[in-house]
Amino acid sequence: MNDFLLVRKNLFRKKLRAILMIVSILIAFAIFGVLAAFERAFNAGEDVSEADRLVVVNKINFTQPLPIAYFNRIAAVEGVRQVTFANWFGGYYQDPKNFVIVMAVEPETYLKVTGTDFAFTPEMTQAFVRNRTGTLVGRALAEKWGWKVGDRIPISSSIFSQKNGTHTWDVTIVGIFDKNKPQADTNLMFIQYPYFDETRSFGKDTIGWLVLKTASSAVNDQVIKTIDQMFANSSWETATDTEKAFNKAFVAQLGNIALIVTLVVGAAFVTILMIVGNTMVMAIRERTREIAVLKTLGFSGARVLRLVLGETLLLAVIGGTLGLGLATLATLLMRQSLSMFVPGLRMSPEIVLTAVGFMILLGLATGLVPALNAFRLKIVEAMGRG
Amino acid sequence: MSDTSLVRLAGVSKGFVKGKDAITIFERLDLAIPQGDFVAVMGPSGSGKSTLLNLLGGIDRPDSGEIHIAGSRIDTLSEGQLSQWRAATIGFVFQFYNLMPMLTAAQNVELPLLLTRLGKAERRTHVETALKIVNLADRAKHYPREMSGGQQQRVAIARAIVSDPELLLCDEPTGDLDRASADEILGMLTILNRDLGKTIVMVTHDPAAARYASRTLHLDKGHFEEKELAA
Image: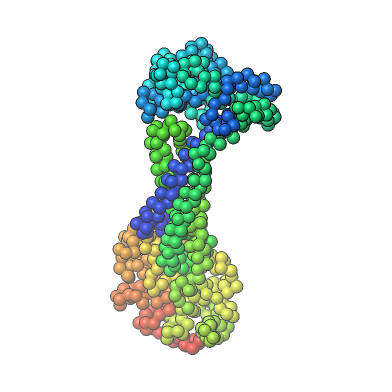
């Protein structure tokens, strides 16, 4: 026998009570795990951001277009190393419910500017540049639909139509690319902007946004100021920002995910804290005489305090681990079906570490009052003698 | 009073406050118990028998006076020091056994050994020996709820002697038992005193139980009156 066995035996002496407390904690950690996984996934864009990459969008909002002429003008700004642009396609495959992220991009420059995120090989880059109706497809998307290089696929747009009235563009897969960064997601595809722009029925010569690389992040502020001043008071004013800030602002439109996580998890934890804390206080009170006996046998106050804290810590770790396991399972199940909307949904090591920290905090917080009561317990009073 | 006594109380006073009244339990009480003695302490309710046992066990403190047990002056020790001292020096036997219900007999007996530096194998040997002494080796894996009152008290005695303490303090050890079980327990205490040389102080209301002791101290109004009784 050792102290751990004593802790375990004490915890499970009333099995139903222990199980109910574990279930309470399990639910709290399952909620935390799933919400934190969503929060991380929503903010994954910030993680893949490069310090020297800037994004230029229409000042009204990023859904409004900009003239393609800005491409050359921005390329000439001092401090700008490379520029590219892209346009949102609003794509789906076969059925509108099969949402697909499709971007019409400037073929020669886009792959260079975003090349650090994805592993574009020279062969696929050349094939994409040369083939006007070519498309580069991310690995995850290709695997989802069973596509392979050489396949000709119809990609439809829920926004744009061709001049002949159809909403569908036929493209040929010239390459399937992987990711360079673990946070990047390959659930997307690129088509050539020239092919898209020439065939669409409206919006010709406009683009969605520009992405540029500066000579170094040190000149970012100067470049941002120069670009926005250059187009100030024009019909197409710009808003330039770092890629990180842009991605953050994009996510913020879905709501303050971090705040939602904090509020929901906070409410769940406070509730659990009160339930478990109160139950543990009662459980220790029921054992007043036994604690007095332990002290009579020679167990010090500090050791009794550790035993009680060990009990609440064990409770939190069991419930928390099971809850985190459930959250992991839930994210795995949701990952496939939500891959288009929340790419990168997963239980990251950071979330697990945070959860372990919460388990320890919960264990200590719920055990503090009963442990101190046990620590201060007077043997004579507890034994009803004297 | 002898300096070689295992237990020595010198001028011990103890009282408590109830409302506005200060109630005295002992006033300058002296007591000496030699090593190997088996003393029964009797007296009317409220005479201070249990308080005396608490003072001897270091779980209560005197208002004044000195308490020396097994060479240590315990009334000046801190709480932490008293815990260590109790674990090494005293074995307790309670009226209601006070076993841990979620532990087996062997695990209950092993509890005091968790406070020692003994290894797992040594602890197991000690536990087996203690259970053999109380004739419960075959019930080692039984839980308290699976045993009779007499058997539970024997487990409690095994727990009290497993760390080989010099002094056993027994608070009404037969108060919750029938006559046959009580005689069995008292016989066991006699063996521990006679064969293993344990010094025993037993508080009891039962004259029949007191007869197992080598002498009986009657406590009344804060003073002792000694009577020799034949076993």
